[in-house]
Length: 160
Image (cartoon, rainbow, N blue to C red; front, side, top):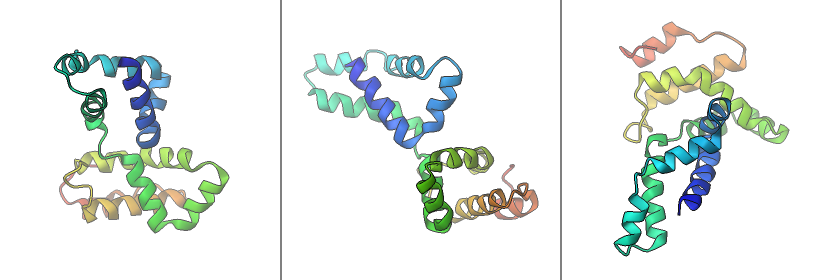
């Protein structure tokens, strides 16, 4: 079961949070990170299987537990904003094969906004977040520094 969960977690992170895998490749290694994450379930898969829970349900329960800290995906949020509001850049980057790299660069600029607003499943549809992310992308595309005053006006009292 551990091997299956490691593979499923790797697939999930590849699709939804590639920045996590990349950052851990530079630290202890992505494989070791995935193994530790699955071990953090602390016997849950074994316990559920011993209780007679079908394997596919055990996988679902464990994956929900393993991925909850990564939801919502900032990467997928950025992908959606790019596709909706910066479609020409999105298509150009996609055709060039650099879309993932560009989103990862943008995340570096946008993570403070996500953090300041407490980005979560409860508020991922908040317009303030979207406006702040759009503005940050606009500035990134023209090579300008993040306009702290503009973002402060949008974000209100949140610290960037």
